[in-house]
Image (tube, rainbow over all chains, first blue to last red; front, side):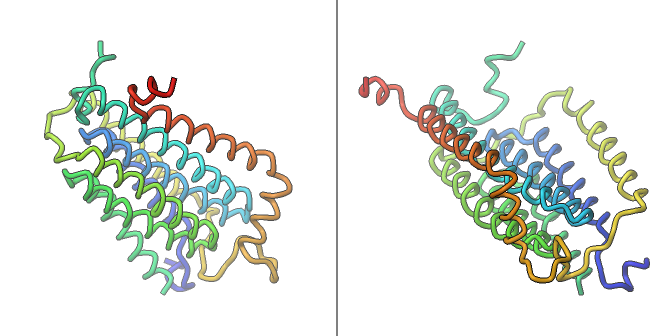
Length: 107
Length: 175
C-alpha cells in the first residue's frame, strides 16, 4: 500500500500485466481455429514479453534491455512478413484457413 | 495520477486481449490487437522508454497490423468455424496455462526488491541525455554488428516472403 501514497506504480504490476497478456496469448493460440488469429496470438505473446523487458530495463537502469526490445521488434517484423507469406501459400494450396483442415502432417 | 493512468491503459490492454479471443471474425481480432499494442505504447512511455513507444506505434500498430489486415482482406477470411478443437489442448493446455500463470504471479508478488516506476523517470539518471541519445550511443557503438546483421535478416525475410507468396505460374514464366 506504500506505493499508493508515493504516486508511483510498483513494477510488479507491470510484470503481472505482462504475465496475464502472455497467458491470454497462449489461450488464444490454443482455442483459435483461424490461422491468421493464431498468428495474432503469437504477436500478443511477443508484446507481453517486450513489456517485461522494458520493465526490467527500468528496474536495473539497463540500456541493453530496451535495445533488446528493439531487436525483438525487428525480428517480429521479419517474422510477420514471412509468416503471412506462408499463410498465403497455404491458402493457395488448400483453400482454407481453418487449422483443423490443414492436417497433412498429422499422424 | 500515474496509478490511474496505469490502470486505465492496463485495462485497455486486457480488454483488447480478451476481445481478441472472443471475436470470431479475424478483422475484429486484428482491430483489438491494435488497441492492445497502442496501450502498450502508452505503458512504455510511462516506463520512460520514449523511443520504444514510438517504435511500437510505428512498427507494431502501424506496419505489422497493416500487413495482417491486408492479408485478412486479401484472403477474404470469413468467420472461423467453431469446432471442438483437440481434446489434448483442452485437457492439458488450459490447466498448464493456469498453473504457469499462477507460478509466475506468485514469483512476481513475492519479489521484494522490485522498484516503483514514477512518471518522468528516465532510463539513466544522467541529466542531459534523452532516451534516444542513450539508446543510440550503445546501439551504434557497442552493438553495431548485431544491428547491421538484422538488416541482412530483414532483406532475407523480404526475399523469402516474395518467393513464398509468388504464384507458381509467375515463377515458371520468369525462367
